[in-house]
Length: 310
Length: 279
Image (tube, rainbow over the protein chains, first blue to last red):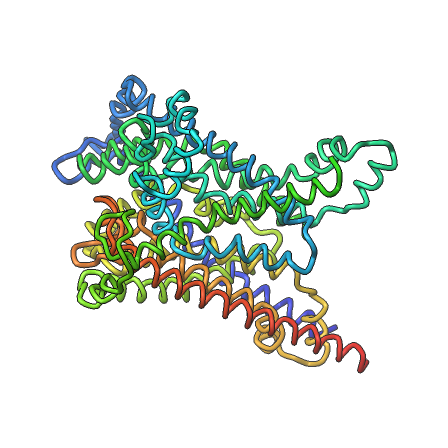
């Protein structure tokens, strides 16, 4: 028993270091940089430097905030449209990932126990190989004479996509809303499947037997038992897809076109092409405001999942 | 729906899903052997794009830089991630725990453009104040470390939660000192999680475009940045060749590592079973 108290004492003494080091790290490299972005977004540029927001002048503390960037962003049509269309593409991607991923995860979880590890491994493997290269590969598949482009035209899906205004012309798939959404669904599908699978694999199948004993058809039991029980997985998966999609840059840059406005690309251009750091910072702050609620939902879910397993 | 129809739907859905996931990779590999420089026009088998890579100095120096950064990122992430996971699992209450877990989890979903921009603006401010650090390998590493730590924390944390605390207590009852408990009991039990976290953060860093673009300086162009700048301009057979090599190396590495991890885990379970029988 004495040794046990000894161990706890050791842990308690080590506690400062174990908590302190990673804590300081995230404060310094995650929170603090964001505060700087916030500051720069309201600062007046002076050549390459920025005026201090707080200045001590004649014994008086002066606060000078330049809010013109924010005013500009709310009044400029293009920014507003871009934010809206980012949300739209992220939402469409999330819904499609859920529609494809839920049955996929469900069938995985109900497959024979012996092949489940292999099935899981096959979902994880593309996840390990380069994301950039897999997105690039779609460029080849969707340009003229690409495999997928040929197949889609052969079955005539291009007529449907064209009617939906998702492609610019019949038989042309690249640089369109369609190619962008395909790239995003493709990239983020494993992020939807994995939490859903984790959730569905743990489900107690006796609950379904109980439902069936009580007269529910498999279809009713699925909607009234399985789906509500997998709510946590649905939320986690949707957030893991929706939030990063809003600010996605690489996929719109490689697969999107002039029609597909995405806010991540606007931020990139403000920073790298226009060198307008305050404007880029403002765009970033507004983007964070946009994802704040989904982010809080995600964090709450993560915390709950961490508590639940104890 | 009959059970048989259900099985058919389930098989078809899984097959379709895997086809969707693997089709692009297959296309990349096949067209890396295409003789014609025009994309999507097959004109015969060749290895010339691979031969050309040997003289592609931009790509080779990018690869060497990327490997160094990925190695350092993986090591740093595992250390920081293990500490953070310990903090979150072993100390259930401390001041600012919610803020801490929020800040550790947020980089998992936060759009990378925001992380890249904010880190860069901070590093520029710091550099103006104290003249250090220059943008380059170090700053890229710092960015990757932030992302890698978040992933490593999740992986290690999941393992730590599954651990039976009685094993640590038993070791102490048998006279082990705290440091020995950690190195002889806790560490071997979480070793496979540390290994997966290392591999995951290594590949993550080897693949990152956005953070590297914000944080790189003149002369520090990583391999993904080289690939990205070529891919932006259009399809390029040299990219296909690099892609094939990376995909093959990573798949082989991951499969071998997971087989080794699975075997170690089986042996451990057998040992536990044998010990239980002995007792």
